[in-house]
Structure formats: structure tokens, C-alpha cells
Amino acid sequence: MPAQSTRPLDDERSDVSAAATQAGRRSFLEWLLATLLVVTGATFVRPVLSYLSPRKSGKGAHVLLGTDGRSIPYARLATEPTLVGMGVDGEPTIVVRYAGETRAFSAVCTHLGCLVKWEAAKAEFICPCHNGHFDANGVNVAGPPPKPLKRFKVYATDRGEIGLEEVSA
Image (cartoon, rainbow, N blue to C red; front, side, top):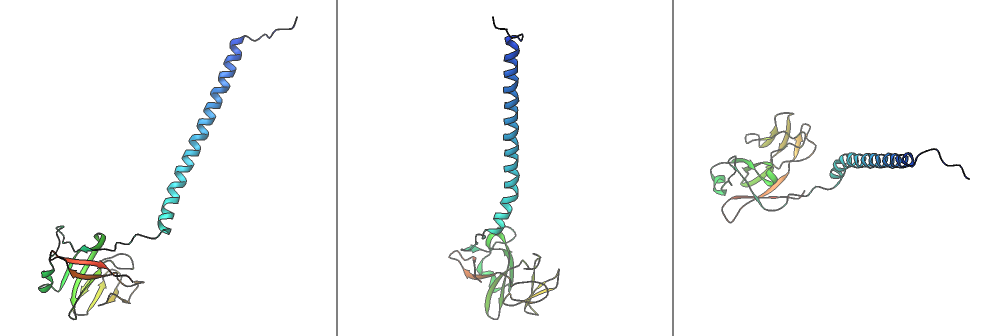
């Protein structure tokens, strides 16, 4: 007669269920670790990809908005030689009448993003933070700014507002 196992059947079942529970915990922890690694990787990769991918241009028709959020009438250019407002994509914009021409430029300095102001007496835009100078065409002529100001085409819309359209460089 063969020798019988001295372990009861319940002990074998508990060993099997303990092993299954251990395997279930291990697979859950492996899944959790993999998920955390993917989320962490995506957190780091997304900004890099957005930096490397080209920005969508804000080209198209836009109007100059005042501080109250309303569009500025084109007729105001007849009485005010300089207007400041929010232009394309909410960018601070300066519209000036100079040498018989109406010009519009981004008011954001290309050096560190400070706001430039128009000095009519000198016929130039000046960034007071770092002494950057741009001529009446928005071209950087002195100081640390690395490139010209963004330029916009100015026109009167059908509704009599100041229309702006980004000019390609």
C-alpha cells in the first residue's frame, strides 16, 4: 500500500491560493510600475515634442481690441497717432502713424518679452528694461534684442475697425 501524504488537502489548497495571490500581487505591482513609468515618460516627452514641433501661426484677420475688450475704430487713427491694444492671439500691439503710413508691431520685445513703447520724437521703439532699440520699421538697431519686432498689416475692416494681419518675415 502506498504511503499517503501526511498533509491535509486543505493545506494544499491554501498553498495554491497563496501562490495565486502572490502572483496576482506581483502582476498588479508590475502593471502599476509600468503605468507610472509611461505617465512619467509622457510628462517629460510632451514638452520636448511641443518645443520641437512648429508653432501654429496666428495668421488671419484679427481686430485691435482696447483694454475694455471692444474693437478700436479705425477712425481713431485720424486723431491719435499711436494706439495700443491687444492684437493677433491676444498679443500686445502698437499701431502708429509714421511718415504718412500706418504701421503695427507686436509690443513684445524679442529679447526677454518686456513691453516696448513708441518714442515719436526719436521715431523708434524702445524697450526700457534692457535698453533695446528698434527703428520705425521694427528692426532691432541697438541693445540685446536678437531679432525684429513682429509686424502686422493694418487695414480698415468692413465694420470700421482696425484690422490686423500678421506679415510673413
